[in-house]
Length: 260
Image 1 (cartoon, rainbow, N blue to C red):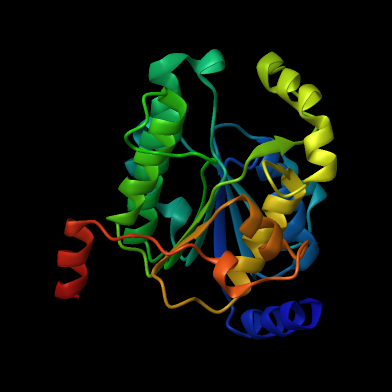
Image 2 (image 1 turned 60 degrees about the vertical axis):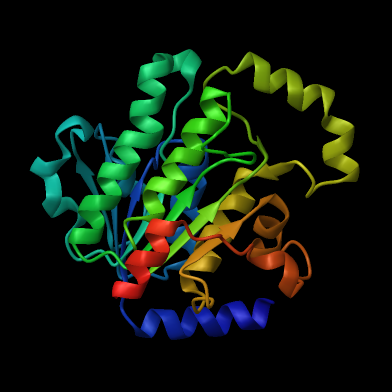
């Protein structure tokens, strides 16, 4: 796996790709930026966010930070210009932003970013979703995550990679009592079955970068469930049947693909 990764990285670097990241101040986003800085797969990485953080002062050459208003993203299209790869780790919670705010961030902002990125030349969009995402779910969280996935599919990127991690393992800066409770209760499960229902944020970030530098699969849309994320990150010996879950195409997707 290590040798294959190095070969993929070498080939990828020769192609001179540029990327953008939204959600880079979040738990996955922070370690994703760190991974991108260490790997140096991209000649240019644009960090797109709502506030200035000056994070680029701690990063290597090629990183730049662009402040945008996600409610008026059409006014900031230039932030995505020239980026052929996009990473999304943007997300909030209902407790923090309310039901409408959660939908706005986890669906509307993501979709608008994807639309502008596609129009600006983005070929590969890597999206962080959640385990159990289902557009028909009765739960707001999993329903919104599922609806975001479906919305991204019909944008028709050349390549769309969706990551569905389980319970994220990290030391959060913000307090999430319910998540902290489940992490405590399920700690034995995490220990004995590390790939079953949990994923360290570092593993998600590494899997996203490894996927970005890897040759595309035969599927336009790649879906990575929790175990497959661990495999893509190099934590487990990969099995072909476990790596990329086939994604059923909607009728609209099928019709649109036939027109291409």
